[in-house]
Image (tube, rainbow, N blue to C red; front, top):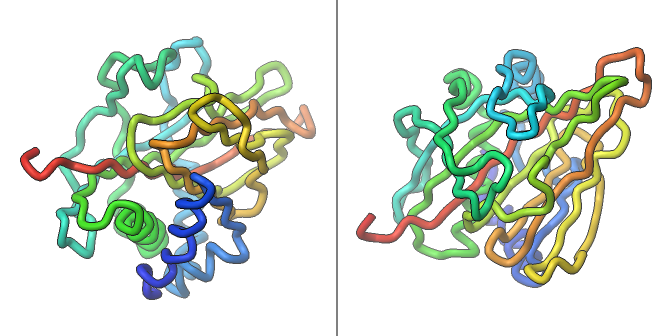
Amino acid sequence: MPDTAQSAHALVERIRSHDFSFVPATQMRPLLGADAEAGWPAFADSWNRLELDTYMGDGGRYRRRRYATLSAGPGDAALQVEPHQPHYQSLEYNRLNGGIARHFAPIEPAVRDGATMQAALALGLAVFRGLHPGAAAHVEVHQFRIEARADTVGRPTPEGAHRDGVDFVLVLLVDRRNVDRGTTEIFDRAQRRLDSFTLTAPGDTALVDDQRALHGVTPIAPLDPAQPAWRDVLVATYRRVPPDA
């Protein structure tokens, strides 16, 4: 695995200056290292085994997902897997789906512990530690597949532009098939647009300071209405844990 602290330094400086960073796949995948690259096909294939998200407040059946929770103490170099638990967001941060404990299938252990996901999570931890030196981390990891059909758009962020109520967010594109739109939009806390870009190549990544910026993704539609369409991403959120927690 590459030196993640060194790899993260330039990303941290970019986020400090702009509150976010877009990292193209041509830069991101080499940062993850040779083992992660070798494991990418199996990593990406695991998105074909996600389960339907039945908690959508808009009644949609266009999102599939799996979920895991990890942690790292202030001096820990590696993340530790926590017992499987429900995902919870307050209504303050998610007016559509928040306010209840949502139970999702766990990320498959071989995928969670594989070189590709571990490299992505380790890089995210290094960036988080660059932004918040010495902090313990609570990390929530989501595999998302958003599907679109001729008669139904897929909504990667149905709650709209939002904060997740954490400190730092990593969004890594894993696959994009037959998809139109799906543009990532970044806003400041006053809802002023900072930038927009589209994750198109597997490995394209958005890094966001969740304390200072909002993010959202426009709905997706199939380019060819007769063919399946989907957008697969890995999302990892990092939150500081108080010393007495």
